[in-house]
Length: 112
Length: 114
Image (cartoon, rainbow over all chains, first blue to last red; front, side, top):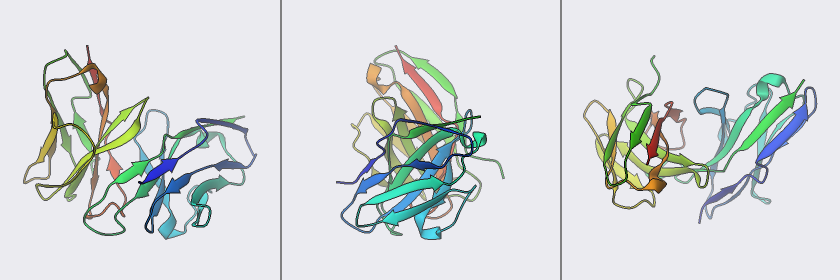
């Protein structure tokens, strides 16, 4: 069964410190993985997806199929990064059927 | 472009009643998905519609149903409400017909069942 696990419910770091939000998944096929973010009083929005291999707002995420992980990293956290982060897995790999499976989310707080 | 809109934003209902929530996707988006968000279960997929057809459904009882209209607007209905149905209901739309692509979320409808 598909499952996305975010082991940390809360994560706090100081401004300028590195940050890593963990995400592990279980899926029998080849997953498509995403990070969605929700800033305070804003909507859930896409931050990045592994297929794009891009860096958004200084965040990167590498898919490690051996460890079934898709951790989100940023070398120098900023106060505006404080938000709820959700790791998500798409089960359809481009087909017309599927859904997004979400982790429980990690609330990141960056202290000044 | 205007974002995904959901109405109403807040709703209070009594056990046993039914409720209808509405979602208007971004113009041109034909895929609409619904999610239930609760503190206990997190974000859970309810169903997805594309071109007025339900293509996929999550593990929810038959009391949860939905539909999509020709203009891509979607409604979800919950009949015989239970206390456990209290949640934030999120709608998301996408231009493409696959979850491989970005989902655009609405602000949600907060349903409270008393």
